[in-house]
Image (tube, rainbow, N blue to C red):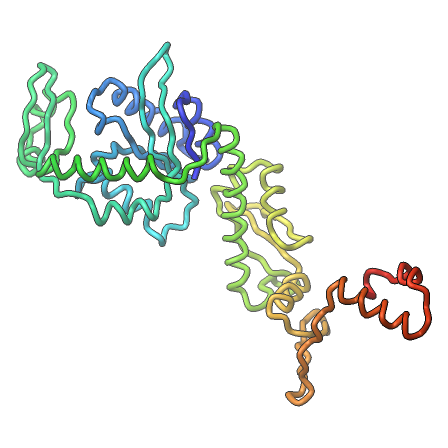
Length: 346
């Protein structure tokens, strides 16, 4: 996992978001930056960390103190994004907001594993049934969540800010402190935003190529009309957002030389097309079964049980040289003649 220290958060998160969020990026990023700017003005260290999540269709951002309170938007958001059944490519960070300096929002980013983080939230989140209200007049008040939910529209107009409060503030402090101690002592690799983004692009391409391979593996036989090709679809958001160079790089991650992309008139998605012979040969290699190709189909060769033999162990180069030297001595061949052996014969 990577750590990016003392960086301009607006610039860094914009670069990161461009690698993974294809729709609603500017609007959602602006909302998360506004939340970080408010966070920079707070004094309590427990208010200084936010969880920032990027996915293809948007960006979410939650105060970490809210994430570890049951029933809050942050709690439900992290559990949703961390669910193993989600098929989107998601990246997430703990954003440690430091300060505003010379118009720049400064802080550090800690890459997090969303699934593991969500499991931790499920286990350690504390009960939260209170709301703290900050009115425009400066007055603050704490009330039960049920009472807050029943406020009329006129009461809402008096509010400038509100947030959930834990039933037991001490317990929440213990949980947040433990999370940060583990984060500080974690095995993070310090890097700059450009090194990290380069890794993100590679991981993103692997993620979507793996999706394509998974879909292809679900097809037992060619599904084109002429039965000559295996065809599956590429995520419509990816197809719409990737430029030709990005699509080419994605195809390069596939283990097929003749993979092609196609989009027909009226379609809102892109097709990935692979010749059937290439996939069938690849599958035979994976299962390590000898076969012949007949009429474009792979026919496994059946070997009688009593004729099956274990393949001979390939001799090492050193053993081959020793055996050759011994043979040459027996036949009176000069040792220098061994230099004529081809590597394939060893």
